[in-house]
Length: 97
Image (cartoon, helix red, strand yellow):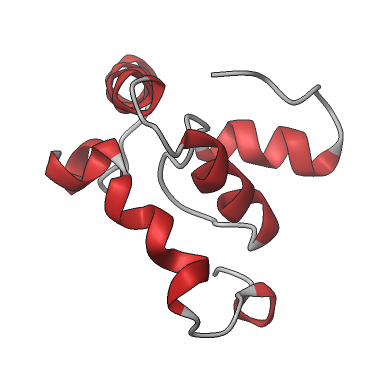
């Protein structure tokens, strides 16, 4: 579950970046895996989502948000769940998209 205590308050300026996200016009299923998805299928879906993120003008804001609140699901800011876990646990360097 997301760490809700880390979420900023309901100030529009803090969330406005989301209106510029490249993902707003994409199918949300691309960014969030279905229950039980594994292996190559999941990897290909994650890569397709990351390709959308790579074109996004607010990728940095999205990535910072996902890391700050420890977003547990989906591809955010060009990072998969596993990518974020690695960054947060310190097992890998932060990757550029």
